Amino acid sequence: MDDVLVVSATEAEAAHVPEGTDLLVSGIGKVRAATALSRCLAAAPGRYRRVINIGTAGALHPHHAGLFVPSRVMEHDISAAELTALGYPIRDSWDVPGGDGSVLATGDTFVNDTVTRERLARRADLVDMEGAALAHVSSEFGVPFRLVKVVSDHADDSAMDWPAAIDAAARRLGAWLTETGFGEAVSP
View (cartoon, rainbow, N blue to C red):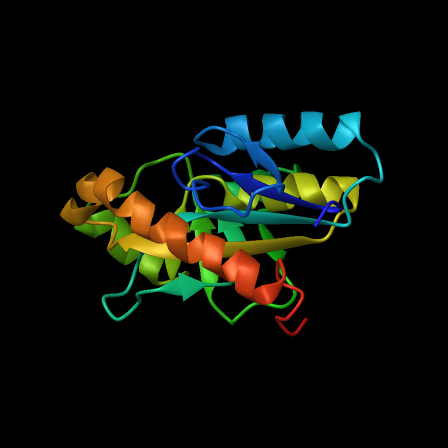
């Protein structure tokens, strides 16, 4: 699909994206993701009718496994309420049409401890390091956005095994792109 841009943090997570796909590998973390997508969209205004962020995520609840298409993404490591109270309103969450009802929390911290996981689990289902930044940039450029995440760990000690889980996750992500026609078959 030439008018859809697929964004992945790493080459490994995008290893099974269908050949010929417009693919942007952004790098890990919010700053790298936002910078890479901003450059890409600014260099080709109007070229893309949708951005799809694929990748892995930590599950914040023990019963979560498999592939998710989150309906909401939020930044978990910005003090939006405090900044807003000081007179500097900050948007820290975005609704994502066509999702499955799950919520993704994004932050620059690699979550692998129980205390952080339990705190985030009160507000979200999954955690990653790029989704909210990409949603923000897509919103700023007026390009529709979708998230597709495969659970690679449970945001605990198992997160340190993340590299071993990437290929299986990448296969599921590539299959989702192929089976859904890059999300076209998923109801909006």
